[in-house]
Length: 333
View 1 (cartoon, rainbow, N blue to C red):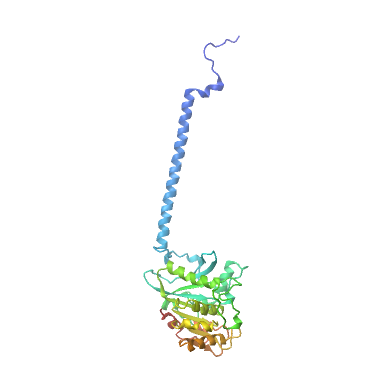
View 2 (tube, helix red, strand yellow; view 1 turned 90 degrees about the horizontal axis):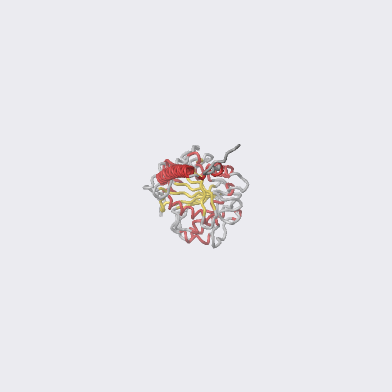
């Protein structure tokens, strides 16, 4: 016979509600919360320390005005001493470019800057890889010659004699610096520049703000073929911006040369050029001289289109033009 227990009946289903159990649960809960808070504090402290470290490192690498310190440049991302970059304007248009920064750059010193405008064959192609488009430029000695890595037979050693910034923007096909057919020679300038040419000028504006060592009185522009057109077009639109210009195998608008009266210009063309007619440059020089200006003009009697090896003293030059770089880097405005 089973006897009934008198007094309180213990119900196994309700023993977790006893005061002792409740106290135990509260202690466990407090322990979990305390541990979680400790872990969060440790993680937060680590993140804060990491942020402060990276901020200090970034500030040290950038310098007071945001320019890249030479010792911090990513050498692996460079080609022939140039850094690959992209400029974006206020409308969201982008222009890839390559920047050469002088070795041992010191923001307290002043350095010239050369804007180099490429020819039509060096335009980026939409279906190319970035490396293929880069190679379109850097297979050309006229791009590499400005770097201290250049080793051509007639090496002018530009960076050793005239440490300088060099900027080489790259247009995407089918765009070009000036919207005029190359085979037509001189042309009538339209009121507004192409987007690409305007961005090239805005890019130089931007670099002068980023690199306080750029000398605003020694900005130079030179270019070949379509870049020769771009050179003429730039100086006729912004005649007081550059200290000197050297257009090669190009042409401009002869009716606008009056604005060039204070600008040193040295133009070059091959007398037998089958691609861009030599009379385009002849007309520009004749118009400048008629306006009382004194441009330099070198016409290569047997030269065809690709004469820039002679001007820039490249590896394929048979008779390099003497004193070109001395003349260019001596100009100031």
